[in-house]
Amino acid sequence: MSLTIEGAVRLGEFELDIAVRAEPGEVVAVLGPNGAGKTTALRVAAGLLSLDSGRVQIGEDVLDAPGVYVPPQQRRVGVVFQDHRLFPHLRVVDNVAFGLRSRGVRAAPARAAAREWLARVGLADLAGRRPAQLSGGQAQRVALARALASQPAALLLDEPLAALDVQTRAEIQGELRQHLADYDGPTLLVTHDPIEALLLASRIVVLEGGRVAQEGTAAQIAGFPRTPYVARLVGVNLYTGTALHGVVELDGGGVLVASDVIDGRVLVALRPSAFTVHTELPAHSSARNVWACRVTSLAPLGDRIRLTAQGDQSVLVDLTPLAVAELELAPGRDVWLAAKATDVTAYPSP
Amino acid sequence: MTRSRARARRAAGTGAPLLAIPPALIGVAFLLLPTLALLVRTRWSDLRQIYSSREVWPALRLSLESSIEATIISLILGVPLAWMLARVRAPGMGVVRAIVTIPLVLPPVIGGVALFQAFGRNGLLGHPIHSVFGQDLPFTYPAIVVAQAFVAMPFLVITVEGAFRISDQDVEEAAATLGASRTRIFTHVTIPLVLPAIVAGSVLCWARALGEFGATLLFGGNVTGITQTLPTDVLTVFQTHPEDAPALSLPLMAVALIVLVALRDKWLRSAASS
Image (cartoon, each protein chain N blue to C red):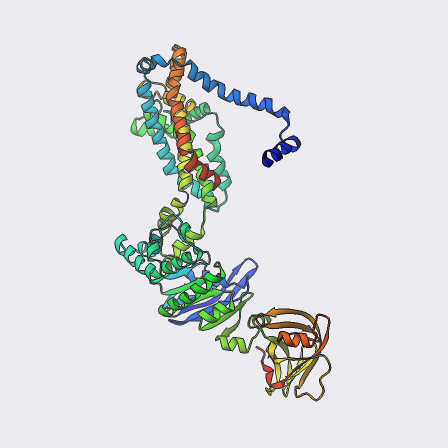
């Protein structure tokens, strides 16, 4: 059964207008900056918030539509909250059994099922503890077991790794990937972390300001970013402009020659590693694009140096430390940036 | 050494002014002296004889029973009321909160008069009850319980309301997504989370009910073995044999002390800090 959320809800000044669909066994990430409406979307799916218009559906079951509102109790969705929200007064095993107990399963079989789920997340020996005695990673595992134990029709994860430290996050990420692969219902994963979306989801919906900015596989989004936010996320230079026979007049000034022959309003993407940097105007170069810029900052990025430069446009460039040293690059230095037309990706603006 | 010197230096510079110390000490003495006098003036050797001749045991038993029943009534009515005050967003909640605090600010003896106007033979509710059932509430054992509950319940309501107000509603949402009905959420999540406050509030409520005097005397009367609680018994004894009154005060003092010591660490503090 697939999960469909399609509609709008207004919260004060903010309006979320979203269309997301997750197929059985599919993990769809809702990716976006803080305040984009990610959690609101998840609350709509869980039934903690009702839509003003539109509908929420699991399979053929309409959960939210004009005149219809099924409360969270009857939706059979499993939710893993960012702050885990375990019941502090219940033992771990009773936390996991809570969903089954609430749906009328007797104590003994509910506990047995809970212990099984605890074993699956590797916490069989912590069944008798209280949540306060768990580490962050353990609590998040228990929260996942609790959500899955009542065999939900859909799984909703709200920033499940955000509250964890880096080391634990890496561990849980791998486990979570496995558990999500084992789960055969639709999963909605809300996150602000592109790596998390990339690792855990097969499809990504980018949410910005309450609207779906872009949707697709990780490759589609990384290759053809639609908004400055997505471009920043995937680390590419993104410009808007008007193309005529492959020559793009950029908004704000400057020209780029692309290998794609395309006309009309376009987006142009360039990887930071596509540029070469010159301290003099390059003569006899094969690069079709040369921009005069001034270096504004240099910062280490992995084994590279990321340089930002400002000309008609703002540009990110990745260089080796050796190149930076040889060219004596520093903030304030005037440089020429060159890029081949084949490294320029131009595609129609939405 | 360094530390004590530092402390001394601080005391000279920014400590309390010396002028504050004598009134502070007088304050302590003022609070301690009456309790001390009570202990000093009790006729310890005649304790057994005083207790049997002054009807202490029936009165103490009545006090314990009625105060426990008043506390149970307060729990049954007061916890949902506290929840409503903390969680229900509706116009008029401010008025409801003010109503809850009426018995707190009303002199208990006026409370007794008020209870009469409500539940007495000619009272607003007492009159119809009398004409239908032929029963009167005043000067009966139930009247004692009603008077104590009226005066003591606000202590419970206010303590528990504060806890409901700050308790974590996020886990209630989590419970809802796990299929728990509203009732189940209330009984299995909300209430356990505020349990320390419920215990603390019950103790305050019970202590207030146990010591209740004014409303009890007016509304319940002072009939030995039927409506005479320990506090009203103390009044009777004080009027006839004042030298025996200190001995009669001991059981109430002992109960107060036990409650204070037993619950101080575990419940009262955690409720105060949560």
